[in-house]
Length: 239
Length: 126
Image 1 (cartoon, rainbow over the protein chains, first blue to last red):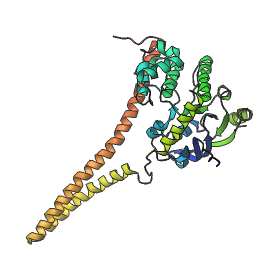
Image 2: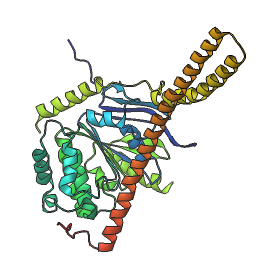
Image 3: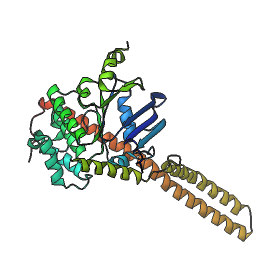
Image 4: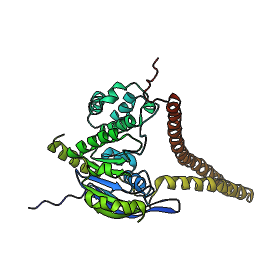
């Protein structure tokens, strides 16, 4: 007896989203398979962050469907999606600035699956040794790179099945970006599905299995990173 | 994480999504309750006024007792309506307030960082 093909872990069908009367996503279709890394690229204002917020349940849909593991979850709250294993690490600082590094990790430990507080902290320090040295420091006073590491460590503490990253490299030094994407590559190898949005395309191309080009709220192209890279200049410069 | 762990996690994800209790977005329970609250707040006083006119328009004690029941119903509608309205309105306000609090904390942290001029300084303990 042949096995039924499994639906993709994430499927976005005809996604439309708006801010008031202004529609910013005009029918976006994308899929993300198990253990796949999909990079969503596009110029500023293309609707990338809105797309992620729609997927995470933080922005209302104006049309279309969000499917997780083949089930339509338009009505599921952001909390329900996060509990199931969809983890969004938002653009910029996704940490609690007035809590220490350790306290931020403890917040994550509260919702971590089958992991104790100590295990969550140990895993985070193992992954990012810099955080161990700064565990008593307020997260808001960390450097940008360290804050992003903390955000990533906190997200990973929840043992996500689908990791959604928004502009991981924003405002960070190239070495830090390299280190962060090294971690993302490791996660992908371990089977976590990753959807990553980047404005600066080259940093993510080495990690992605597929890339999608989002321009003015529409998917202009989807394909292997090499193929998409050749279309970037015209998309960014409007040529 | 080995392959079996990964497969297990993906299967767990599929199972968790399958067991999600989804609310039909068309019902919009919160909004419905607020609307019911407003309706109760409007209908309650109307019932009270109608009861007053009924009781003063007749000398029949049975009709006057009906008017008392009507008045009490109006009072109930108004109280329940007010409770539903306050619940819905307060929940929205509190969500907004919390989002604002988080935003202000971030802005404050930015100010502290800028004032220090060095993100590596230690958090003063004690």
